[in-house]
Image (cartoon, rainbow, N blue to C red; front, side, top):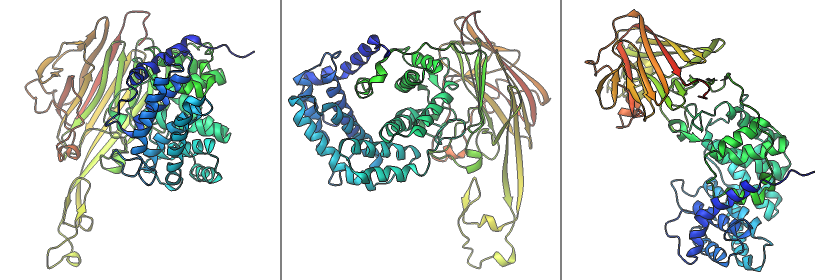
Length: 573
């Protein structure tokens, strides 16, 4: 017996599509000036889906068809002679055009055979898709996820306009292997690109090609993501190698993937995640088209499984650990790419946050450690190991050098030595050819994750340099027991401090095991965050904003920091 339809979900996705589609249909002849090609295609798909859906206010509406035709004319005008679309910072980009062609092909499936009123729209969609086919067939990419987006576009083109060359090209890309690691994370470790590109593309390819291994990759990624869901309804991104590493990412876009696999596999944990993704309401206008193209999405979800608490997970490939309990949800991270690559770069994991703590509405968004050592930037662990259950050790050693005179054989009469980069500075000094005297600084942080927070033991060894531990709290609360030092900064001078939001609080207490007394509020020159010269040389920063509590001093130092979450009994972190 087939699973019954979830009528409430179906009505909700129709309302989400109607919110942007109804105003567009109200002015069907209004030219969409300045709308990018990807948005034009998405609007067309949404309008056609609304026309097709009995639950939409635009079901069977000729005005929806007319608005779709108007947008298609603008989309056709944005298509260059190559079949690729103009616009955006990626010039003549096959993958960026692939995003648009994916929507064009889905719209073509929805429009084809839907009646004479959509005949012209269907023909224009086919014209646009076919014009792009040649460039997508031969085009290249420049990010890992682009491969799967481009493959999905080629597979969709083949679905509507069969051509074996398209499938051959898909197989050529897929032969490289899907970039998913042993923990279920894609190589970019990005929630944004997993949910918007890799997972939907691989789901489409699994269906068109009958590839169970691609479906398995998506299921593995969704399973890994379960342990990255935070109590505030977002997905952890501190380990990402893309733009989302510095921003919260909502769980909501994961709704169709968790929902579809929960229905097809019966997994109660995926069903629970689907419920969490929909908890704030359904606002994605694209979901209506997805339900029409994949009717399984409209079935009733299986019973959700209860969330196991306490729960802990260590993702070894990303060097990220999380522990969740009824009181606290704590994340510790040591997987930065910066220590290995010695640079800040798009495509690398650069976020220096090494710990977060959620205690209901009281949230410690970021714990970072700045050191005044040759302007090399804040602590980013080069290594992380699990020393015991829920106990982790993070380490980083920084080195800088002073250079000796060149040997006689390497001197030049004209003084014109080759330009070289020595890791922090570039100059015409042939650095690799010179003897060097190194100066080193080592930071070790031991984190013991507890059910009510974390204990930190921080050891800074090497020359006497200033350092500052920065704790950034999410706005909305009150910090007590600390001394304000201006610009949203506070100093933990003596005794504990507490950050409180309503009945939820996080208590911070520090103690010195070895080293000088901690810096007082008069040392605002020490109690600050320094992003390092990779940012400051171009006038940039990766600094946080908001309520920032500092503990600092002049190293070497060994200190302990206790972080404790306190919540009313019976509540969930």
